[in-house]
Every structure is written in structure tokens, then in C-alpha cells.
Amino acid sequence: MEGAELELERRSKFLSSLIQKKKAVEEQDHCDRLNVRVRASDMPIPLQNRAFRAARDHLDAMPGKLDSKRLALALKKDFDSSYGPAWHCIVGTSFGSYVTHSTGGFLYFSIDKVYVLLFKTAVEPLDH
Image 1 (cartoon, rainbow, N blue to C red):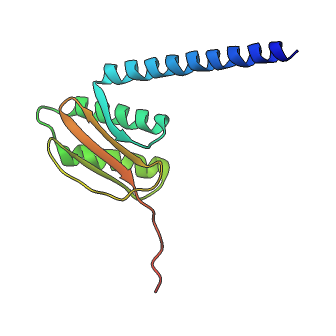
Image 2: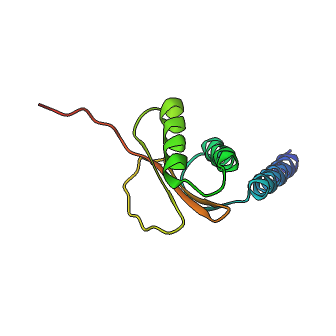
Image 3: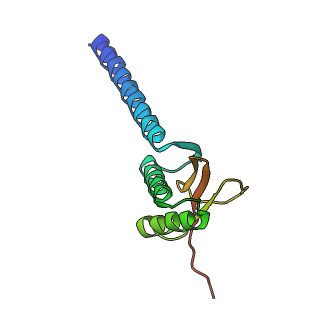
């Protein structure tokens, strides 16, 4: 009986590793199609994908030159309306930053030659 349980556990671990590998390959394929590279993140994958798709759509819709402010505003509004207030977005080709963010609310990525920093901060009421 013990041998069967060990074999079942071994197979379960093997299948789990295959599933994780498949998900990682699918995620990389998705990023490659959008020409996205994650630089740093602690954001859940579904939110990352939403940011990637929104950035790609807005960039593709821009005629000619990059409008960093317009892209930053669009991403901020999208995330504020979908995931609550206090999202911040910085877009450009060269910038430095040092920010404090809420857990699970930080994404720094590049798309084409544009860098995007999207992060959420906690909103606390002012005490008067």
C-alpha cells in the first residue's frame, strides 16, 4: 500500500510540474506576441495581461509619435475603474523611480521601446 501511495505522489508531482511548464510557455508566447518584457513585478498574472493588452491597444491606436502622458492616463484610468483607486502610471523611454506600492500592485515592463511602471498605493482617509 505504501509503495502505491508513493508512486501516486510521484506522478502527481510530475503532472504538476508539466502543467507549470505549459503555463510558463503559454505566458511567454503571449508576451512575445505583444512584444512585452516584464522587468519586475509582484502583480498577479491576469492583471499583468490586462496591462499588456491595454498598453498594446493604446500604442497601436496612437498615430505617429508616442504620447507618454496619454498612455499613462489611459492605463491609470483603466486600472482605477477596474481595480479601485490609487493606481499610478509612469510611461517613457528613460526615467528613474523609487516607489512604495501595495502588495500585489506593482508592474514594470517594456513594450516595444517604451517602459511602463504601473503601481497601486493604499488609500487612507485623512484624520481631521
